[in-house]
Amino acid sequence: MAMNTIEKIREAELASDEAEKKAVVDADNIVAHAEDEAGELKVNLTKQSKAKAEELIADAEKKSEQILNEAKEEASKESEQLRSSVEAKKAEAIDLILGDLTS
Image (tube, rainbow, N blue to C red):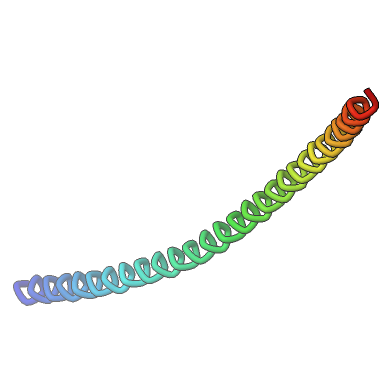
């Protein structure tokens, strides 16, 4: 009977050792899988961030171009108004000079 008990204890120790070894292997596999998934997630998030950044840059470039075009239009209008004003004042000055000369 003592031999039977000793044999059962040895079997239990072997089973325990095997379970521990399996647990270590399983844990290593879980960690490796988690690291792989984390790496894939990092790559995907980087791609998404880059795409979003490119989209934001494109939007900013469009807005910048639109603002620049609007500023050019406004400057052109102001320039035309100044030209018209100068022409009118030029005509007034000529009339004044001619008026002074004829008086």
